[in-house]
Amino acid sequence: MPGYLGSAAEIIPSENELEDDYGIFDLEKFEKDSVFAGTLVGGINSSAANIFFTNTGTQSTASATCYEVWFVKNKIVNSIAIKDPDSWKISTYPNPFKSNITLNISNINPSNYITVSLHDIQGKHIEDLYEGKVKTELLLQAKSSLENGMYFLLIQSGQINYTIKVLKQ
Image (tube, rainbow, N blue to C red):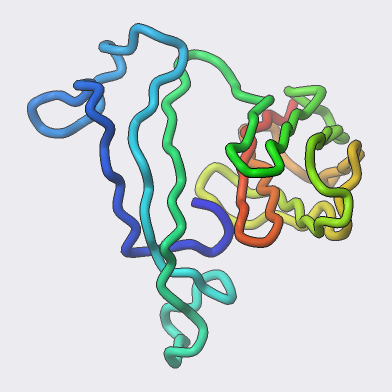
């Protein structure tokens, strides 16, 4: 999940009958390349990662944020239109990347402030890649010690969080 959104989130499954008798999504039933799985609702917003053992009650708040959950079959998604009044369009290239990756952002107010961070497949924060006003093109450089594999770019602006899957070669 985006940012430090954690426990108590619930998914409301769509009515697309993709689940088996045990409530598990059956990927064999996919007829399209992408399928709307449902809506993720709520959760706990935290001010930092892994605060559950030190939380005094002031570091987290309930969240009413809703996220669409999509299953994408047999491909890497690297260009997504965010359903937002600004109609953001975000794309990355190259994907897979070696050390640098370019992030293109369009249809967003240039005075918006964004952060871009890199996370591993378990959601662990690896590094911050950018913090500042929106630019239509950002050249991001990952650590040279970054191992090959799948990662996620997390783009955040205000209450909007978006994740893009990227591959390091």
